[in-house]
Length: 257
Length: 345
Image (cartoon, rainbow over all chains, first blue to last red; front, side, top):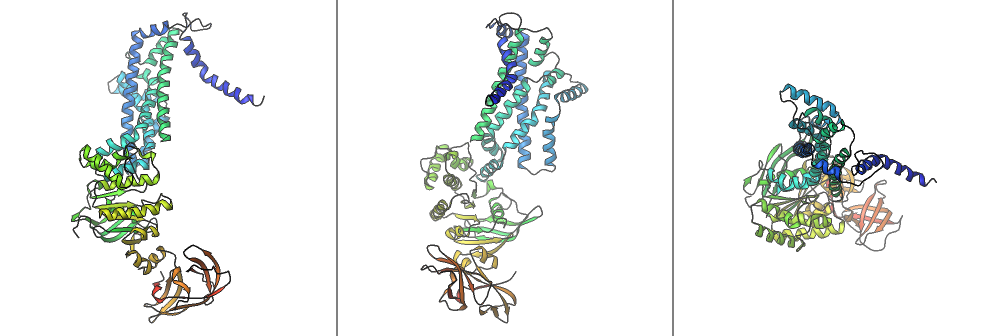
């Protein structure tokens, strides 16, 4: 009896976490028009419907563009900041590092509102670009933290060795720093992609007509439940899982090396 | 001093924040010499190597290599190459790419680079392994790759920063011999930083003993060992018996009699353990009681308490033979030529 308890607890905990996802995915294959039991599928009709819906597919591509673009920019900026702070003695480096990481503690709502007010003042208004900027703001601290942690002493010595052998600063970065950091760069990129991909509140506040997928889903939700939503949700989930698995693979490989 | 591998450091001084690392160091190295910078950690030997390699701009002083003043030149544009303590290999490159890196930077073509890399790998005993990656190698092999990589650019001066520190004793000995062989083969100037005085004696033409940012002694290993310039150098080069005494009027008075000495005041008479033994004439230590003794293969190491100086324990390396029993007495002496006298700091 006592030996069963821990396993029962584990099963319960896992069910608590994964059951909603499993139900979501299951009823995306529902045959009827309502995503409630009994299950009468499987049927691919809702996926077909979703993929032929121009609004949804448009939102999906916008989400992909925002996620990839904001992640790339966040990683590029984070790399620059990490390289500067890890390799040079700068006045107030500690404060700069703290300020770079601090946005992690600010809620997305505050970031979104702040940016909305700023863009309104500047006369720019909400747009897909504004959403991208918002996602750079939330992803930059993360990218910086991951890259800064990866720029250890071992890497610094290799860079020094490259300089000693006649490499210029640009050659050091291209031939040594970036290749050695490749796993961390990719991890930071895909983690940023994941966070941007299903981010709602900033995207909601900073977009108007050209919305991203989470905002589009939210507006669909207002017209009631449908297996279509389950199908979209499953697609979103699949993309996130793929990105997270990539991150884990990259970080774990680095640890073993 | 204009041969390409000749080095002249003049008045090198450097501080890290509030800590003094080097205080006005002057050092000349002839082309083709094998010099070790020896000292405890924090003595400034690695700082001096970094100044020479161009990784650190000294607060004061000048660095000349060959006929040129290179003080203001970064590492990339100096005729030096460094073998780092932790190897600092490029993990994402093959061994051949590692070794060829400097040649690539110098603009050598791919084919010539590959041939030269293979040649250098063969020189350090890793011929045919060029396609491997650094993580597949042992520590000793990695160090060889680091050596090949530094030598591939044909530096005028090769800098070695505690290159054997991470290797086990047996491998260290083998690498010492190999470094010496390679040095003889190439004729390049080698400057080797170490804190191991045995390593320094094993490989160097010349030992520079450093302490607290200054040079304490500088000379061939045998001279630095037998007649160290300072008390610090004497203590750092090996085990030492220190016998206190008072100098006055050209003589030093100790518990074991009077020996000629200059100066006045408190002095220390230093004796290497192998200089102490029965049947030596010169300094008469007299009867001493054996506290303990152990067999070390080529000698017997014993702690002895001389009757003339109760409380003073002498260490002696006695010739191999029957190990003396505890409490036994022997009549000790030391040759005058083995004595070194220093003012007590």
